Length: 359
Image (cartoon, rainbow, N blue to C red; front, side, top):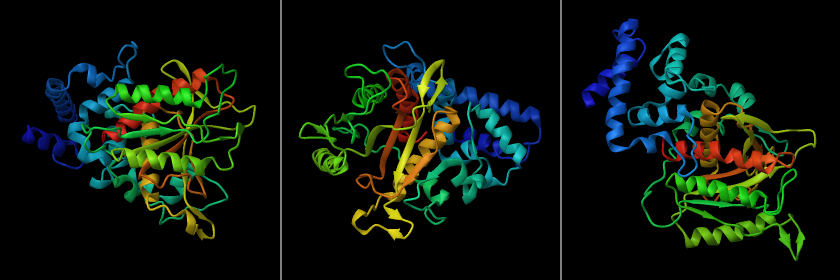
């Protein structure tokens, strides 16, 4: 098996002997794909590979199934698969051929593109005036080297924490109980179906003395989730799930697998203003936070085009300092329906699964 893998890798690298012969390319791809599919299926039956959601009659994106099947071999060569063949000096035409072979329905990027600071910032980020993100901070090679594959997945206790700093956020025409917490319930359910143990904190942090009060919501939330993490040190991923607030004429909606789906936005607090770091908001996990959101964004771009907005960077910390794999997510906005935002949890759960399983 190792010899076959090495042969396949050698022939798959543009510039190696035999690569310029189309017959060899097609033969190697066909044989290797079938070989790895058969071997993989012996250890992981088809239901796991297809990503079927139990009891729902839905199947995951076919491109996700292909990614899972080939992951065992390509895990060490992710740049080759997702970001182009910069490591081996392939031409642009050869990089495009590789991308076509993997049949990503969305957009993939070459590493050289991502390393271009101006390209990266213009295509992936919106920067609020309260902060700044310089070239040293946005070092793509460092960010892509972070490995967020969950350790000790069989251990007792939750590995993912979902909470809501703003628990009272609702949606257009939403009924009783159709708020962001209910959306969190659905995301919890989807992630648990994929084998993750999830703690969903439904505490109310934005109501004080019976009145909606968001002035200290992040302070109250920090107290609450710090206690949860202390009680459950197995938690490795922290998700603060929100919905955005936009102009009433703005509709953040796309279509995924035939369903109207709210767009989502990953949000990073940088703990710094244009004048420098904020001393009382230190975040030792800032690089991890940035790496996590970027890797989620790249997976979403490759598999679910149009699903994510640009990553939003702002000056404060937003309680993202507790774990490297911490993220704040804006799922839709007040102009989206509850159904649209709930639908968004399905591709979001797939994207999380890809990153947290190291696919």
